[in-house]
Length: 263
Image (cartoon, rainbow, N blue to C red; front, side, top):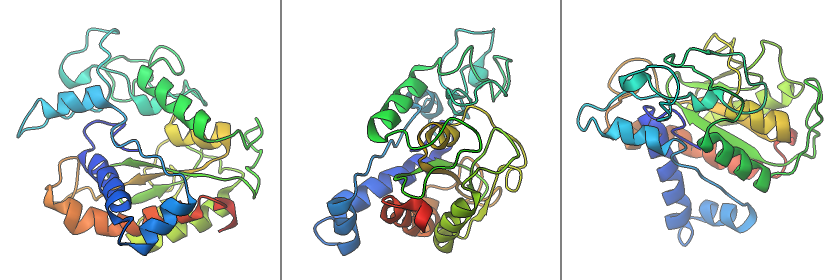
């Protein structure tokens, strides 16, 4: 899934490239054909459509809207309106900002936003519950499913947990799987503390792993500077850098989906 943070433009483009690769390549690319013949693949290329509309309304000067377009709380203006959808998920919600105009505003309650409700409903429809309820209950080695949520920027592969600095009960398996992703894109594999340096609550990947046991990670696409860095990289960077780096990682995720914790 991509563009849950609307201004992270490269992530939506990567998701579309992944769709095109699988659909257009089925007849001519053996790997694409093998994936679609054996694996159910779901792609949400834009998880925050209203926020993306705000970004696009700036034309050649995109508005840096991060959150959705819910302006029902506070007296926020401009790109400060909205709820951070990646802090609104129902698993371990409540550790981020209660200030309506803050970039990490978590909303009035867990799963209050329709976008999050739709994403969680989709995840529950695709995946069975494969993990216990305790923080230290690991997903079993037989658990199926991989999930990548694309963000920018940082050149990181972030593994659970996000809500705490404690490592997940599947930490060793996550690091092995992350290393396989990193073999393609060269990103740093680690927890929030080891990568971005801050905790996050109510995130999508904590939800799909914590509630369902799905092997879930965040890719932070692109660096912090340069023409291919930040929230507004040059469009040419998608084909020159982001897609070539991440195509192999997405293929690895699809191939690993049958047994991600046994990689």
